[in-house]
Amino acid sequence: MGIVSILHTVFGVFGDATGLFLFLAPTITFKRILKNKSTEEFSGIPYPMTLLNCLLSAWYGLPFISENNTLVTVINGTGAAIEAVYVLIFLIYAPKKEKVKVFGLATFVLAAFSTVAIVSVAALHGKTRRYFCGFAAAVFSVIMYGSPLSIMRTVIRTKSVEFMPFFLSLFVFLCGTSWFIFGLLGNDPFVYVCNGFGSVLGALQLILYAIYRNNKGEKSGKPTAAKNGGSTMEMGLHNGNEHLERGDTIAVLPPGNGGL
Figure 1: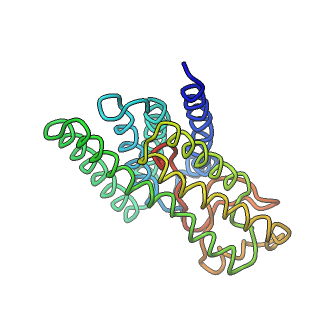
Figure 2: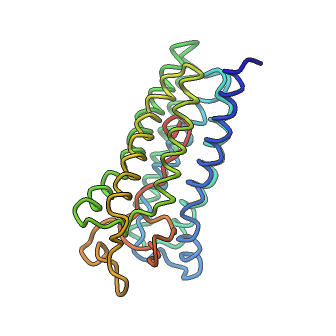
C-alpha cells in the first residue's frame, strides 16, 4: 500500500468522523421534540432533502458504481439511517400541515432515489453509470452545501455570530476539507469539486466568526433573529450563552460526495 493510498484512507476515516458529528448535531433539538411531543416551530423540510443526498451519495460510493469510495458509502449510509429517524419523528409529532409537507417530500425522495438506482443498474454500465450517479449526487450536494449562505447573510447583516455556532462551522470546514483531499487523492471530481465548495464555505463561516466573535447578540430575552423572523442554524449547539433552537432550520451538511 503506497503513501497515497494510506493518506486516501486516513482522510476518508477523518471525513467519516467529522461527518458523523454533523449528522448527530440536531439530536438536542429532537430530544426537545420527543419531550414536548411536538415539533413546535421547527421546519422538517431539510431532513428529507438531506436524506436524498445521503442515499444518492451512498449509492455512488458502492463498488459497482465507483471504485475506492467505500468510506463514502459507510458515512452516507449511516447518515441516511439517522435522517430517516429524523423524518419519522416529524411525521409523528408535526402539525398536520407540516406532516403533509414532510410526507410529500419523503415520497419524492424515495421516488427520486429509486429512479436513479433502477436506471443506473438496468440501463447504464461502466463509466456512464458512474457519471450518471455522480452527477445526480453532486447536484444535491451543492444545494446542501449552499444552505448556510442564508445564515452567513444574517451574520453580515446583524454583525453578530449569535446564530452561527463556532463548532458547527468548524466541523463543516473540517468535513469538507477532508473529503476534498480524499477526492483529490482518489482522482474523483465528483468528490473533490463539491467538497472543495463546502470547504470554502466552511472557511468563510470561520472568517465571519473571527470578525464578529465578540458580538453574540443579546444576553437575555428572545434571540434577535428569532424576533425578526430571521434564520438560525438549528443544530442544538451552544454559542456563548444562547441555545439555538428556534427559527428556520439550516440543513446539516452531509459528508462525502459533497455530502458525497
